[in-house]
Length: 371
Image 1 (tube, rainbow, N blue to C red):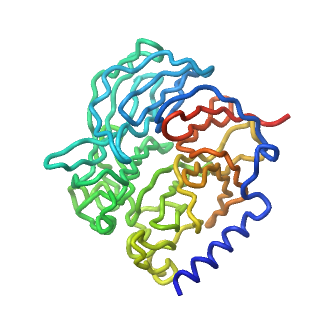
Image 2 (cartoon, helix red, strand yellow; image 1 turned 180 degrees about the vertical axis):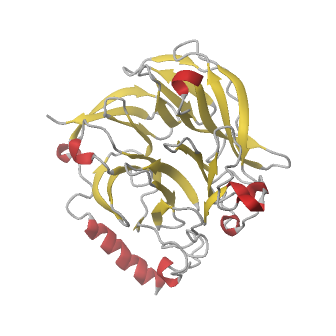
Image 3 (cartoon, rainbow, N blue to C red; image 1 turned 60 degrees about the horizontal axis):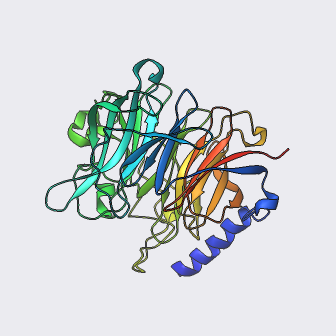
């Protein structure tokens, strides 16, 4: 019966975007400029001078000009545990970067006895061009516990308008930690910029890693962003289908692995979200999977029709997915078939949209409106 329900769900999801799903280049509302080629990129952010700071999964951080020239490699990046889904991950600027020159980045870190986990560090960026170096590197957060395997780190980063750091922490393909309040795996984390736990976090009084937790029941959250109303959203890969887009709220339990609109890769069924109304259901989900990675909520002026919309990169779907965010809902409204796995999305200072493809030979793309 579950597989019949999944098939019906797939039809419903497809119908929700029937007029726009899989638009080809001739139908895109944007032009695409190939700016550069970068092997195994993972994340990017813009520096105030317009240059891009780009992470490569094997452990390299680059400074790239907006015209695609690699200006330099940033020295001082810590050793990363590269392999599987692990390596150097996200990178963002401190809210006070103009004054502090401080950045935040995530990476997979080796532990004892063939274990590993995500870590988040902050450092001073000495320059924004060829002479860049990381100074005063400080690890401010780690996944607890470190476990075997090299999957589902999550480790996406975003600052709120009031300068709290939010971290998406994957459950490391271990399932149960998502529901374990003594672990920070499978959670959304909220911290001060120095890594200290805010005293108004919902579980602060419990101490330890529990105090860090903002929400729980997440699987592999590879996108996290605030919308134009200041609300936090995340997307995460489902198991076998059932990718989710969630409106993240403190103390809410998003259900994994107790419920999902997908099943385990082994074929073992997972109860659907609607069987547990006490758990928080996603605002949108995908069956078949899109394999979401990278996420922005557009607030620029270059694309007037996109304001307030979310953009999700698709890995297995090789697409860019545009979603409408409602007060208590979300829906896919267009899908652009890019022909390559999409790893990362970022909004440029001028309102253009920048996209990184995945894996070896990936391209850095700049999207601007068709005239």
